[in-house]
Length: 327
Image 1: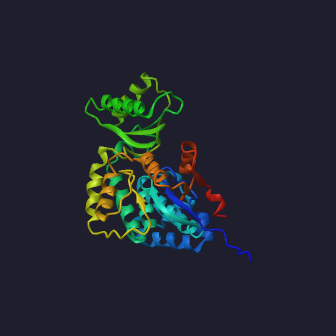
Image 2: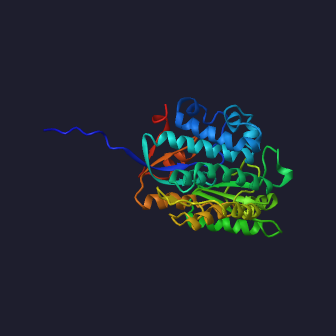
Image 3: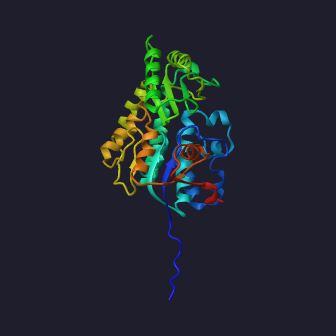
C-alpha cells in the first residue's frame, strides 16, 4: 500500500532588516489582506498614538517620505512591519532561528518569544527617541549628513583581514583631531560601515581613498548610529530595560552585537544596550547561523536588502523569495 504524505513544512531562519528598509506604503498590502498583520499594526497604533498623536500606519502607508525617514518614526515603522510580515509568513514557513539587523533585533526577539509584542513596541519607541536626542541638531532636516559612510571593497583584491585593518587605520587617523569615527556595521566582507563625527568620518574616507579604496558612499541617515556618540542613548536604554521581562526563548536567536547565539535574559538585555553604540556584527551573525546548520533563510520585512546580501555573499544556502509566500 502506498502512503501519500503531505510535503513537510518549510523551515527557515528569519532575518529581520533594519533602518534603510523603510518606504512609503510599507505593510499596506498585508494590512489589507491578512488579519494577523492587521492585529499587529492596530496594536502599534493603540500603544503609540498617545505619544505620536497620530496613527503610525497613516505615516507608513501614505507618507510623507521625509517624515517616515526620521529616526523617531522610522524605527517603530520598521519594527511593526517586520513583525507583521513574520506572523503572515510563519503561517507557511516555520521559524527555526531569528536574527535582526540593528533595530531588526527587536523583531527577532518578539519572534523568538523573548519579548512580548507590547513591550517590543514600547522599547522601540523609547530607543528611537533616545537615539534622536543624540543626533547633532545641525544635521537634522538635511538631505545627507557625513556621519556614516559605506566602504565597498568587492572590486578590490583585498583579504577580509586587510580590509578591516585598513579601515581601522583610517578610523584612527579620522579620530586624531578630537573627533571619533569607528566601524559601525560589518555587513559582509565587502560592505563595512563607518560612523562618527562628520569631520572625523570625512578624514577617514579621504585616508581610504588615498589607500586606493575609491568606492565609498555617504549614507542618507540622520546621525552617527552605532558609534560612541550614541552612548547616552544606550545608557537610557539600559534604564528602560530594567523593568522589562525577558521570557524564555521559544526559538533560538543570534545577537547582532556579538554575532553569537544568546539565551540568558541578562545577556539579551546587554546586547540590546551594546548594539546602540557598538559594531553590528552582521557578517558574523549570518555565518554563525550557517555554521550551526541553518541553510534556508527568509527576509521578514519590506524590500530585499537582506535577500540580496545573502544571495550575493553565500552560495551554498537557500534564500526564499517572500513574493512566493505573500500574494
